Image 1 (tube, rainbow, N blue to C red):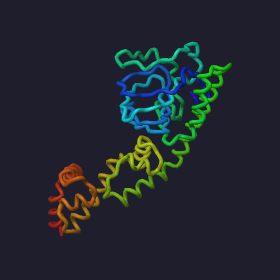
Image 2: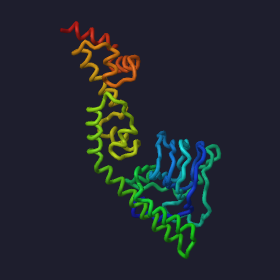
Image 3: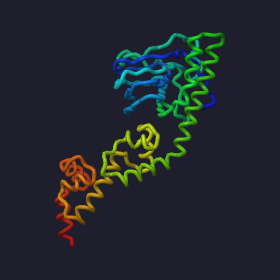
Image 4: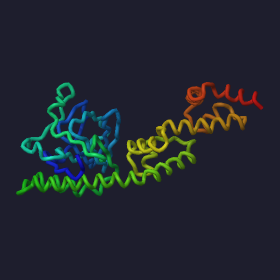
Length: 281
């Protein structure tokens, strides 16, 4: 299915609250959530994504997810199909517990070629999209004449804007990865997390991780570990610092973690590496 073929059918649009975590469940139609406040973590497709205020989340029909609530959350929920093929089914669907979920009942599980709408997607700092989302909720709650048609046109506009935003970020992904690489080079001694590095370049950590792996062949975590270990090798061979001091200087939480990572990567301990180097000169 091409992006131009989208003709969405809105089945539900409203403001909702999440007060407790949601166990693994499946959905029969598509979902968009816009977080107005709070914080949740969604586990989907062997990944986890953290959503905060102004985040937009999309998942396709047939998705299976669970939600861990970190803060009481208020969000806008929109349930819909990407086509009008099941428009006779007008009542909304609630998530179904995994043991009762029947994938054969999924409505129009279309996948959009070369789009963020293939499975699931997250956009951070998406406050600029809220005015469209608010209009969809208003149309759906007021039930004015042709409200479904109006909701559908607004939702397509929203999907187009989400797709545009994703393309823009992908186009600029090389610059973002280079910024992160430079930051790691200058701050490898500090406490670095996927979250803090994603904030640095204005991405969701899930997308930064995907981009980083695509550009470098390594996960963010693995790249940082490797960078620190290579810096440690320099200190082991060029300075008299003790192992625990070197561990601290390259950003490890302790010499035990440092020694374990060093041996896992190079097959010998830091002490053995230092001794080996001394025996070679």
